[in-house]
Image (cartoon, rainbow, N blue to C red; front, side, top):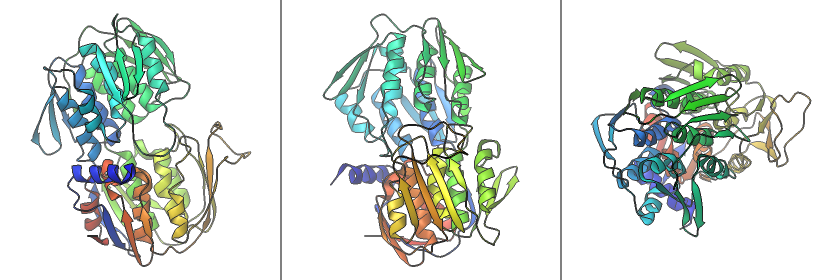
Length: 455
């Protein structure tokens, strides 16, 4: 069994999936109402932040996804006591934090890249941290150099060996001046989680400013941190002596909301996404409307629907917030296979994010991936050396096929394609989807999808 299959099976098992293969009979609109709760990209980081407090933290709207369970396991082996007083509520008590054996960390981490974010908090609490070989979705090179360079700037000593990385802080951690070569979300989180207890002031330039980053900063401020967000992606952090626990409700998952919106558009459906927030989705909503989708904003969510008529082609350039998120393009590409004309998607964040299109072509799509990207006079996002472009010509009817999920967002895109296609599709490795989509099987049932688990 290869590592991808193992990762998928483990992720699915963490949330109780009874099989890693699903058979979908497509060609039926998705219609109904579903709920999105806490964002994967905030909840997991908020759980790590609890390590910094002297008292317990309470996190609400925690999604029931595999990545949350991975972080839960990692916190538990480090002595954090976690209880669940209510659905989606978690109390994290860090009063007995301790070192964990390298093998335990490796076993619990699996394919998750979260362990790298434990470094700053554990260096503050224990004076050392271990990082196993890092996994995550296979969507391109995700170097941890940004993280390690930042930790070195704070005074950490990094020792690499065949098992992974061992970090120590023999002289403690001190504030630093750090400029990221790219506004990486993970590296920004690393600096924030390390700087809040470091001695002195940290100046972070070229920081990520995603909504999940702002929510993490709100959590740290509740804990007693002093964090100033300045114009032009500059963040100042004044280190404090100690932090307390927090009580916080996680920001809703805008990436999941956009995925269900794309599903409504591709299947000619009508989905009310409870918990979707207009402010966090404005860039996506503009593109959704340009393609020909419609949406109605309500206090408790957004209704996404196909209003009839032809879908229109668009040109998209992915970028960091407030640009068009890379997580949004994969689900939307499925809908673009049904647009009349030629669409172009410039992927500037991850170099292998178009590998999911191979399966779409097997289902009848006409997508050409340009591995060196495409130049264009109308480009607004700065070109990156490794960027790629996908040219989608439509409309092309999709037909059922056997598909193996390659990564989280690509996997959900394959679900959308199978639901859009005529005939039967068998999708394997669906456990990967459980890494970031809470109860996606139950939600598909609520929306009227026709499917069964294989085996």
